[in-house]
Amino acid sequence: MKKIIDYQNDMKVIAQFFDGNTALKKLSNISPDVVMMDIQLQDMLGIDIIRKLKKKICRQLNSLCAPALKMKK
Image 1 (tube, rainbow, N blue to C red):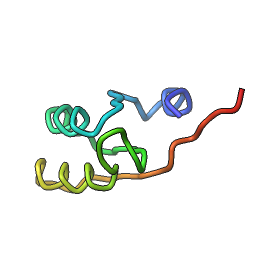
Image 2: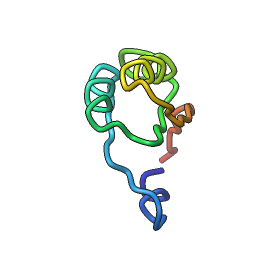
Image 3: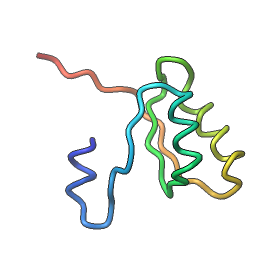
Image 4: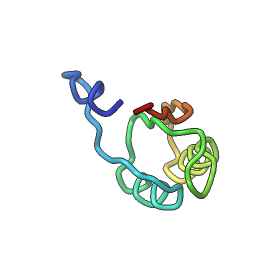
């Protein structure tokens, strides 16, 4: 997904996180326009992270939650 987004001229991946607590802490400081979140991270649900983030940054946040894709070898 990152490669697809980075290929776009008007979009940029500014951060990636693998657990919810780190994501919540770091995203509060970054204050992104759009968040793409896995439904289930190691320590919490993606939708819960987005809800908490919206309360923390106190503004509209566009978000998309999607299940993780596992690639077959």
